[in-house]
Amino acid sequence: MSKIKLMIGASALVVAAVGIAGSAGAMVTTQSYGGGSSLIAPYLRQAEDCYGNPTDLVFKGADLHTPTTLTVPFFQFNGTPPRDCSVAGDRVDTSFQLNYISTGSGTGIKGLYSHDAAAFWGDTVPPGNNGTAYPSVDYAAGETSLGATDVTVYNSGGVEQGITFTATPGPGQYPIPQPKFGNLIQVPLLITPVAIAYDSVYKKVRQGDGSVTRYHFKIKKARANGSGGLVLDAATYCGIFNGQITNWNDPALKALNSGKSLKDLGDPDPFNVPITMVGRFDSSGTSSVWTRHLAAICPSVISGNQYADSTSTMPATLQGPHYLKANPNFPFTDTPGKYTLADGSDGVAKYIQFDPANDPGPSAGDTVIQGRMGYLGPDYVLPAVLDTGTNTYGLNTASILRVVGAKPIAPTAGAASLSYKATIVPPTGGNQSDPSKWVQAASKTADIAIPSNPKAYPIDGTSNYLGYTCYADADVTAKQVAFLNWFENDPTVTDATKGLLGKAGFAPMPGTWNKAITDTFLVPTGSTMSLNLNIKQAGTGPASGTGSQCKAITPGA
Image (cartoon, rainbow, N blue to C red):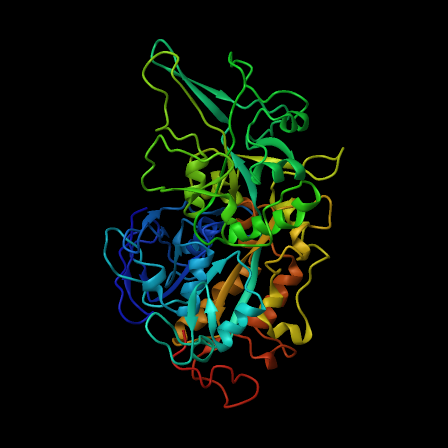
C-alpha cells in the first residue's frame, strides 16, 4: 500500500487521486478529518478503510511537522455477509475518505474544542515534511471522559486542556465552540480493557561464539495463544505501580504464579530483574482509565496509594524520565520506583519491548537485564496486534485474579464487556441532552472504575466519539452520519467474535447502546427528534423548535 499525498484546499471538500492498491482510479470527493486517541487509532483506521477510501494512519511526531505513518492491514470480515476490505467493491463509499491523526486523547480534545488542527494536530498525511495542516476538524476520539465542567466550557467558555475559550478571544485563545459548531456530541464507541503489558524476555547474554542467548520469564500457566498469562492481583499490581514492588523476584509474584520463581529454567544466575514502570508522557485517555481504576482499588489493598483520582497524566510523585521514541538512545537510564514516560501508545509499546538495539557488549558473558511493565490497549499487544498490525514487539499481558480461587481474567473483549452489561444503561429523559451522561465519569466513583461483576476484567473504559451537531458542508454532514450509522450497526464492526472490534480486543457496545446512539444522534425517532441532537448542516432547519439546532450556526464545523 503506497502512501498518499492529499491535495488540500481551504474546504473540507477536495478531490484526491488515490494510489492505494485495491482502489486505484477511485476519485475521492469528500474528506473528513479527525484525531485523538492513540489506543484505538489502528482499529479506527481499519474501520475507516473498510467503509471508505483507505489511507495511512498518521502519528503526530515530536513536533507538528514530523508526523509518521503506518499502513494498517485491511480487515477481513468472515461473518455474514462477508466483507473483504482490501477490495474496493466491498467498501461502502469509496468517494469518502476519513483521515485520522493519532495524537493522544488530550490533544484530540484540544483540536475539537479549538477547531484548530494546525496548532494541535500538525501536518496531514505525509510523505515528507509537507507543512500542510488538516484544513478542518470534523471529529475526535478519546478515552478521557468529558464531564459536566468540560461541557460547560464547550457551551459557555472557560479553560479546557490549558486553553482559554471566550466570546472575545485574545492571542492564544479561541472562541466558545457551541455557537460556532453546535452542540457537543460525546458517545462511547466501544469498551476497552487496559492491559498490563510486558516483554517475555528479561535477559540477554553474549556467548563465547558471539551469539546472544535470551532468557524468558517462566509463566507456569501461560496462555495457549502465546499472549502471556502472568497472574497479578490488585494488591500486587497496586504495589508495582505505586513503585513499592520493584523486582520480578518479589515473593508476591512468586505466590500468584504457582508458587514458583519466574526465572527461566535455563538461566544459571540468581534471579534479579528490576521492574521499570512504563506509562504515557502525553495527556492520555488510556492513562485516565488506568488512574481511575488504581485510585478506586488501591486504597483498599495497599498503604501509600499515590493515585488520588482519574487523571490523564501520571501523578507527579511517580513521574520519571521521558523516553523519546524517535531517538531510542540506548542505554537509557530509568529511575527506580518511577514511571519512564513515552509519547503515545506506540511509544509505550516500543519502550516495554526488549529493544533489539539494547544488546549486550561484545565480550563473552556480557549481560543486559530488562524487566519493564506498563499499560496499553489490547490492540497494541498479543494476540490482537496480529490483526491490527500495529507493531511486531510481541508484548504479553497479565491476567488479573479478582477472587481467590477463581480463574484469573485475561484482558479480552468478552471479559471487558461484562463491566457494562445490565449495570450501565444509556441516559433517558432530560439526561439525554447532557453529553457527560453518555459516558462513564472520569472519577474513581464511576461504576466502571471497579466493575461489579466479579467475572469482568477490572481495568476498563470506553473509547468515545467526539463531534459536533452542525457541519458546514452538506456532503461532510451526510457522509459523517452514514459512517457512524454503519459503525454502530453493521456486523463488520459489531459482531462480538468475528467483527472488527472483537478481533482487535475490544468489546462492541451492548445493543441497547447502539440503538440509543443511532436513535438520538444519527436517525432520530419521533421521541428523540425534539432533542435537536442529530447531526445537521449548519444554517438549515426552521428558526425554532424541532430541527432548529443548526439554523443560526455559522460557519459550522
